[in-house]
Image (tube, rainbow, N blue to C red):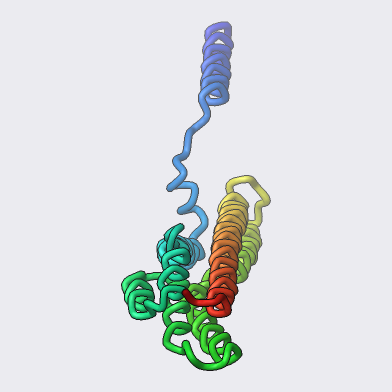
Length: 232
């Protein structure tokens, strides 16, 4: 009897020691393994993330290129127009690759016509350049809206898995509900994060486009003022 009690006590000590070891050293899980627990819903979310990052950087490069305007560009245009050297001004505008230069080139082509006609032609070019800069921005806006909805869909799928597990086993244990909770939390968090990334990216690019539009408007107004200055 004494030996039996001693064996039982030793087993109890070993069990307590293993439990304390597990508690002190919990199992670690990598970020990839955690994301995989979100189930198949994660794959369209991965696609939305890749698409949002691609569109953001593609538009960022294009808008940054469009916003680069030489400091002395308008000064050179002014000097050429005032001295009557319109061909040199046009050559400079044609060889400069940005929206302001293309808008000024259109105005130079209309020199000799009424100021209203020149302003209208430059305004049309400006609208076209704005459209070029804003191209594909609606994709980021769309992703910002639908990514959280995919996360919500994952929540529904997770809850279905949870109740199905309970109904199948008849037990309400942590192991039974863990899969559904993982799907619910991982997809919801991923959808919100991707939607936030797309939303911030869209607003940042819109701000950069507005800055470029202000430069275009300032250049247009300056060009009209130049045309109304007396020539030498």
